Image (cartoon, rainbow, N blue to C red; front, side, top):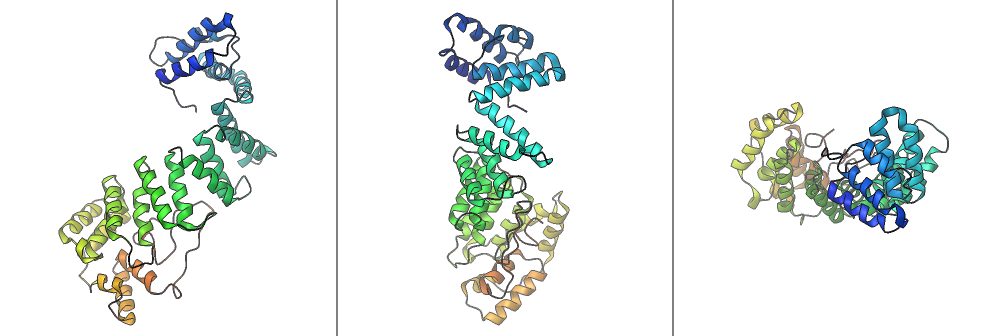
Length: 362
């Protein structure tokens, strides 16, 4: 499905295209493009625009004509429309190239021979023209390795290219690959920055992942205040598990951050969540007893055996921060993180990440 252009942006494209048209056809094509831009507000019809654009051969005009054909004549015109899209793509129209690439990618998933090669060709051509959706789709295809050969280096390059163009999902995926060190050297600070940018662009899970990324750091100097700020933003954005994360930090984080009243407010909201798992965990947190100070354990002030026993007890009580402590204490003894890219999942299988088990989404 093609995104609908606003009339103003469509007119700007028209003016740029007209400069290369033969003099005799300029006025008619200009009228046709303006007419096409006004269809959405009822100022023109697809049939009228088609008549005015009949014979126009610029990339933009070809692409617009393809859509007008389907609008005017319905599914019966799909084959003719596809020919126009192909001609526009061959003349360098990035959206046409993207649409052909996506169509070929779908065919490749259905087992059509050579479709993957064609998908790579067209998506790459669009990506080279700064088409962020094309760079994102191609990058993700390389990361997944289901249709195209798995190539984490190429995939990460393309995802970062799309991320640089403020593509929300690409920023989120870039955060994942730097968090996990998949195709790049692991860099948690860079991962956090990508997650934050994704959140600013509207990705619903990004601020939660930014907070969880900080908690994966093994250093005692990790910025728990910044993690709490991210968790708060995620919670206010409607992320259910972020309510638990914010409450846990307010309950068990460094002493200056602790606030029992605010923590209880977050847990209460979690207990009222429509997500059954979050609601259950919220209730558990409201009912649990207060255990030993986890802040002391995080600073290393408690004996290792006592710390491990306390962390295990808190883990059984459903305390999220205990997962982080277990990871900080025994990296050599605890299961490590194994990325699972079969579905490019955000599941974190690590004791040192707060996104596991009771806190993390399965």
